[in-house]
Amino acid sequence: MNDNFYRECLERNAAAEINRLFCRHDLQHMLDVARITNMLVLEDARRNIPGKAALTREIIYAAGLLHDLARWLEYETGEDHAAAGARLAGPVLDRSGFDDREKTIILTAIREHRAGDEESISLLGRYMARADDLSRPCYHCKARAECYKVDRMETAGKLLY
Image (cartoon, rainbow, N blue to C red; front, side, top):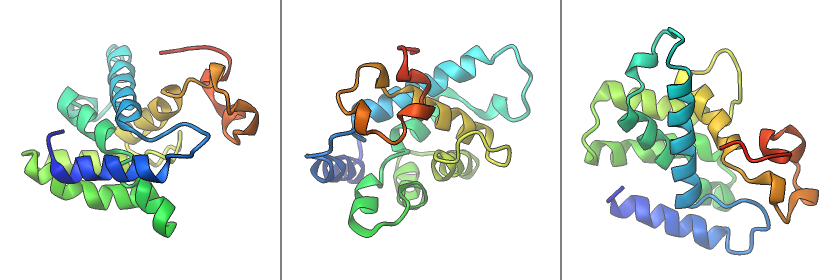
């Protein structure tokens, strides 16, 4: 995204995580989440799931690239980065030309991306939550022994995507 505020948030994420032992929330991670989300949607192409037609590549990539936008804010204030990210991403999406319907899909998914596989979350929120986990290379992580998430991660034993 060619947006000054977006780049500023990436820089703030990097500064907040400079000494982080675990996975980082950088552009590479956000791009990985976008790509894996897109792959999951494409792999599900044969299933006729209500609402899936609205998940265009542009919507999927925007949500993936923005989902951890406010991670730095969680470090600074303790506010949940998913909720804060949905709030901060709105103006970025406006400047990028997304319409209200597209923004609703994207912002809902950003807000829900930590909810896992709960039935009540949106379709894109479910895809992104799984992609967020799949994007992590746990199988060869140096901080694996200290990670509280490794036991639930599909990538703990192998590379999947």
